[in-house]
Image 1 (cartoon, helix red, strand yellow):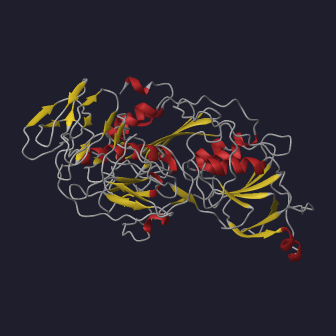
Image 2: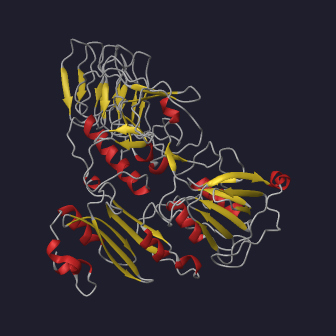
Image 3: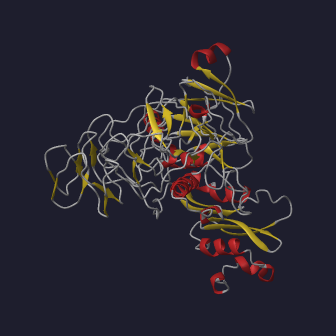
Length: 578
């Protein structure tokens, strides 16, 4: 991540004084990898990247006064003061810069007295310094990283360094961003991390809720507290977590696939998980991940989520701390409608006028009794069934949040709508990077890695993008991070630990592969994808303790043909072989 300067500096003086410029990349945060100071004002911006210009090495700053004066070099941080007549005392506390255009410049970190007239010697510091002097003085450059934070819609530059910063484009050109309120902010490196937005099945319908950030999750909890029945549409990670966590409310779950969790599982894994939907909820398994919290916000009232505003992105265990309970007194009550989508949504008055028949919650598969209860909204499915409910949850995936950044900027965009980035997270525009859900990885991937818009990859990309920006600024080379060698995601579904590795669903392998399975009902489900005797991917559900061994086998691409079915034999400790 980008660092923050802790060297307070104040620049004072006349309008001809030289300026201080930060050269380390500024990061604009939002979406799933927000770094600092998130504002919730919806903004848009325009980048005006200029041609690159050469500049002196950033580790030196030079102060120049009278051109005839001899130079003295100090290797300690400098304090500058000066007057054409009077001596000035200088201390080692945060620096104050004063002086006119003819004053000599003195820099020292020990108590000192500086005197001189227009022919006094000039002091030069080799470390980042605060600068004052005449209009001919060179620009002082600080190598302390600056962090710029903004909201998840558009960047809003906020310097976290207590310094007055300006730029001199004659020495180094700094690009700018323009926010919706017409404010301009300068940058040399910019990273777009605005995440993604939900694909709502119907935009603008007050009874259709999406869950994509902390504010929308809070709004969902408030609506659920007054609900007796809801319809969940979608078959991804959010839908899987919701249908298991919701209590005291009937759930109609509509999916377009033959089995649940199609994004992560095959039909066998789905059958392994389904009994959990009717069983009483168990004590949640311990979360072994690092958790991040915000102090002082526990008692603050949260705003109701709006479709055009984005709050903090949802990370792992997003539902922890939320009370996901309806008005009824039971645990799970979930009915699954497979191979269907939503055809139409009817409001109550419209449905009455249509004189159509809705169904009650199916207690048994053959139950087709009409529902006499009047519901606020009705969902008509493509299989011809209609269910009344209190509201609908749209959990049908996300799209990259690129719209605020495309106007006036010629970004290269991938087929999935994300900003294309190369192996160093650079977009097609100079000095602009992207990371997380907003971007599309356009480099040639590892045979066992692929992009998915998950919180794990968003965090990895953000971390790597910061390293790439710093390396580019310092003129250093950097290799593609190891996290892009193997796809790996750890999560929790139906209170089981779930690990997916590599080509876990044989993505892109065609028919030239085989599967090996091991299943213990209610305890574990292990699936391995093999190709030409080599492990290409795996799905591990439950406490299998196989993830580290399988990671190594996938990365090493060792020929495992000789081991056959013993590879998953529970009576053999596979770690003894490898």
